[in-house]
Structures are given as structure tokens and as C-alpha cells.
Image 1 (spheres, rainbow, N blue to C red):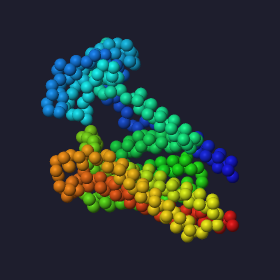
Image 2 (cartoon, rainbow, N blue to C red):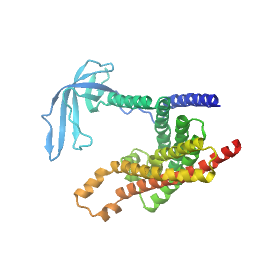
Image 3 (cartoon, rainbow, N blue to C red):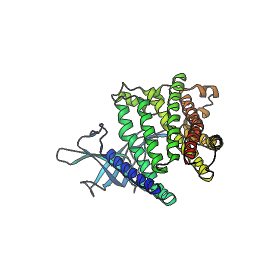
Image 4 (cartoon, rainbow, N blue to C red):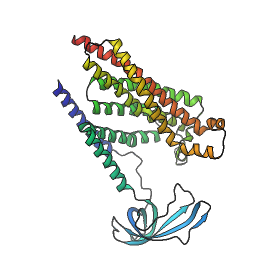
Amino acid sequence: MKKILMDKNRVFSLVCLTLIVALMLVPTGFEKQMYFNAEAVKAEVLSTNESTIYETGLIKQGAQTCQIRIMQGRYKGVEVEATNLLTGKLEFDKLFRVGDKAFVLLEKGEAEEILFANMIDYYRIDKEIVLALVFAVALIVFSGSIGVRTIMSFIFSLLCIWKLLIPMLLKGYHPMLISLLIGVTMAMVTLILVAGFTKKAYCAILGATCASFMTCFMAIIFGNWFQIHGAVMPWSESILYAGYSGLNLTMIYQAAIYLSCSGAIVDLAIDISAAIDEIVDKKPHISSKEILLSGLNIGKSVVGSQATTLLLAYMGSFIGIMMVYMAQGTPLLHILTSQSIAAEIVHTFVGCIGLVIVSPLTALICSRIYTSVIEKNF
């Protein structure tokens, strides 16, 4: 039996690898050349000139001139002068220093000569790769083969969001239905990769799926009740002006509520399911009622910590807004009724309610499935 399960797990892992490769190759449908006669390259800053920059209060405006050496592409080794335009916005502006690696856009002429070099941002691709490798190595060292499968599920989920979810949202598909379908699919793949074809994985999948449906329903109900417009999401209004005015931003916001807590729902479902699986393994004759009560007791402790974790995660995303309100001396009632804070309140509490729901659901499902297996064996 164990050998059959191992074979199933290997086959499923191979299927997931195939899907990952397929998703990498599948186009999103939105690939297009943003700049004509231009090439993006990595470059090293050799010298800088800030003589044309002027300060207005906290912000700097003007342009920084940089002498750069191109480090890749057909112009590798070529030294040119590049311009770093400052817009007066701290979130976008940066001043380069000698030795910095920059992401530069080269504009070319008809004879392929460089006409203009624009300093876009710091070059961070290599740093991002290093960070991803540290994450992967840490997982593999501490989790072994499960860590490898976790990395697979991570990549699969990332590709599902980038290659499927976002393009479908832009094409006008129903946001909540698409998010629910993709969210449940990611949950199933993740749980089977991590837990294999086992009862604890099946129970966790069923619990997470039921909780996902209920969380989506609550996201719609409370989102509409609070009258939160989807434009509250950062950059969302820019989508409308980019030619996608028919998108329902409010429904996308409500779908995002579910997606942001779906990972925590899956995590809690497998925590309870795995704990019950261990209990049944140690006490094979346990009754359905005892399994349910054990699952509920386990859930009480886990839900408390998970809800706090979810709250802290959401708090980090809007702490800047809270600081602005506090610095201005805005009354608490005004803060709570503002759309930006109300949107985060809906986001936080709907997610936490989803966590509360998945605990008893998974415990109940485990009590049914494990009891039927016990009765069958004995």
C-alpha cells in the first residue's frame, strides 16, 4: 500500500512539473512591445552629476546625469551618458551612486546607434534570484523532499496567478468565480504535493474548499454592505484608464479578499487534519465524537494564533495610512469610517471569519471520514 502511494505521489509530482512547464510556455495574451527601437539592459554607474537637481522641501526635482557602462546585450562594454529624471515623488525617485547597478532603457536610432539612455531603476534581478535561492535551500534543508514539493506548489501557485488569474480578470471573466476556481485548484495541488494521496489531505481539501465558498460569499455580502468601491486598491484606477474601463473593480476587490486569506485557510485545514490523523494513528478505536471534539480543541488554539498572524499581515500593508491619520490628529471615528480603513477592516475580519469557519468544518469532515475508515477496518 505504501509503495502504491509513493508511486502516486511521484506521478502527481511529474504531472505538476509538466503543468509548471506548460504554464511557463503559455502566453498571457498581453505580451506586447511597450517600447519600439529600445532595449532594456543592466549597467554600472561610473560617475554622477547632480548639478541640475534642485530641492523643494523634502522632494528633489530635475535630472541626474550618470556615466554608465553597459553590462549585457549587444552594447556590452559601451560607455554612455544616461539621464535619471526625478518626478518629485519619493516612492519613485532615486539618486544613483558610483558603483550602483542600474536597469537602463536604451533608445536606438535607425542605424542601431544609441540615441538616449534612461535610468529606470536599480537592477534587482540578481538580488531577487539570490533571495529565492535562499528560500529554496532553507526549505530543502529543513524539510527534505517535502520542501522540494513545497517549492513546486509555490511555483505552480505563482504561475496560476500570473498566467491564468490576472489575464482572465483583464479579459473580463467573473472575478469571484475565477478566483474561487483557481484558489481551490492551488489548494488541492499544494495539499496533495505536501501531504500526498492520504486521508488527511482529502479532509483538508474538503474543509478548505467549503470554507473558501463561505469566505467568498461573505466577501461579497460585507463588501457590498460596507459600500467599498474596488478603486480603493492601489493602482486599480489606472487599469480603467489603460483601456479596461469595463472591469468591475469592486468585484475584483472582493475576490482579492478571498485570495489573500486562502493560503491561511489551507494552512489551518491541513494543521487540523494532520493532527487528527496522528491521533487516529495512536488511538485507532477512537469514536467520531472524540475525533470531532479533538479537532475543535486543536482548532481553538490554532485559530487564535492564525487570526493574529492574518491581522498583523494586513496591518503591515496599511500602517502608512494609519501613521498619516494619527500624525494629522484625525479622530478615531473619522478614521474608522474612511473608505481605505473600512476596506482593510472588511479584508481583515472576513479573512479571520474564514479561518474560524475552516476549523470546525475540517474537524467535522475528519470525524466522518476517519470513522468510516475505522468501521470498515474493524
